[in-house]
Every structure is written in C-alpha cells, then in structure tokens.
Length: 217
Image 1 (tube, rainbow, N blue to C red):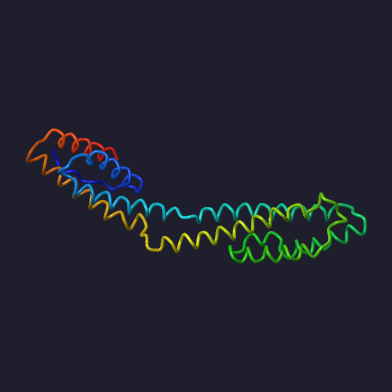
Image 2: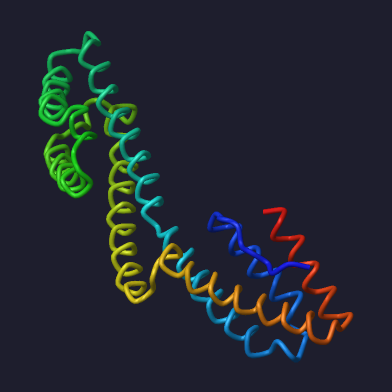
C-alpha cells in the first residue's frame, strides 16, 4: 500500500474528491481533527466556486435580449419607410427614420453602460414623436419591450455590483485550491500512518476506497 498522491485535478474534480473523502472519513473518530480541517477548506473552496460563477453571465444574456429587440425595432422602421404611406403618415415615419439613422445597429456595439444610456436617450426621442396616426401595429410596439429590457439590464448591473461587494472578501476557487489540497494530503498521510501501525479493518477499507477514487480522476 502506497501513500496517496493527488494527480493534477480540475476544480470540479477536486471538489468531488473532497466531498467523497469527507463522506468516507467523517465517522472515523481517529481522523476527526484532519476531517474538520478538510471540511473548513472545502467550504471555503465551494464559496470560491460560487464567486467564480458570479452573475456577469446574467448581464450578457440580458444584453443579447436587448440587442435583439433594438434590431427588431430598427428593421420595423426600415420596413415602414418602404411602405407607400399617405403624406401625414410618411411624416411620422420620417421622424422615426431619423431616430433609426441616429442610433441604428451601432447602438448594439457600444459598451454596456454607453448602450444603456443611448437606449434611454433613444426612448426619450421616440416618445416625442406622435405615432397615433400609424395605428397600433407600428414600430412603437417594440418600445415597451425595449424599455423593460433596458431596465432589467440596469437592475442586473446593480445586483452584480452588490454581489461583488458582498463577495469581495471571498477568494476565488483557484486561490482556495492549494489549502484544500494541503488539507486532503494531511488527511491521507494520517490515514496512511494509522493503516501502517494498526492495520485496522475500517481504516484500511476507507484508505483503499479513497486511493481508488483518486486514481480514477
């Protein structure tokens, strides 16, 4: 029987090995101090994993949705500009076309905060145009959805900043990994020593089981 040497592990594999090792060893009284050390290190590691998955992804998805709605709005205005409207309706469409030309699809290429401000400005300019004459089925039907999407993005940004502030004292999983690896290695050395000295059946079974898990990773 050899001392367990941990292979190079991915973050999720390290978490799995830590959790399984605790499951195997928690009931063995002789290992209590080392098990407690692994428990603490694993908890810190898992908090780091949560931090690494922070809600920046939510902002990305909301931005994509906002981009799609703005693109639809711009294409709808373009389509209306081709339609042979009566003079009074054409005047309104021309006003919308000026907004489309000002912001266009380039608004979707702006940085997050710049785009949010540009969308707010675009909405203000749109609301200054009386589109009543175009009826209900006009490009304005996109506006409530764009407004909601922009507000949702603002809220996500606020939430992200709050989460960032709350987790500023939490190290990432990458930073916490060495401490968890060290705690596991100390646990395995203690188990190995007990196996060599006492050769107890429960300790030997537990150590053999963990050694087999480590080899499969």
